[in-house]
Length: 62
Image 1 (tube, rainbow, N blue to C red):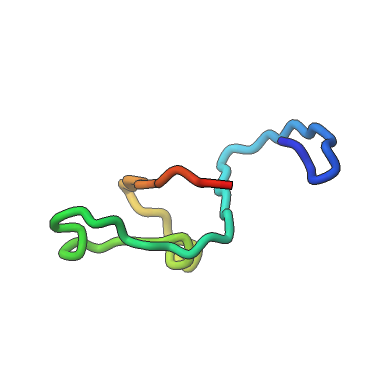
Image 2: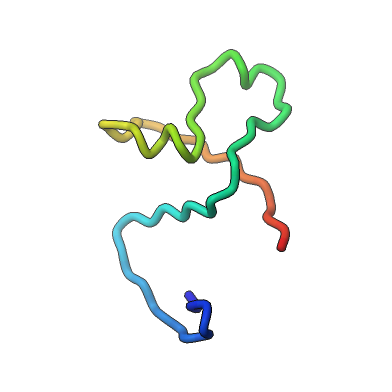
């Protein structure tokens, strides 16, 4: 990754979660509101990892 001052850093980890600080929003997918869903806030509040996890993401704009 690059820091704000342009320095290149190499990171190594078993698990990486990038929280961009954006507000979560549910995409308009039919049936999504009828199943349990996590967002970037609620996933951080879990006591245990889910057995299965599907991640839906949208492109970011600058």
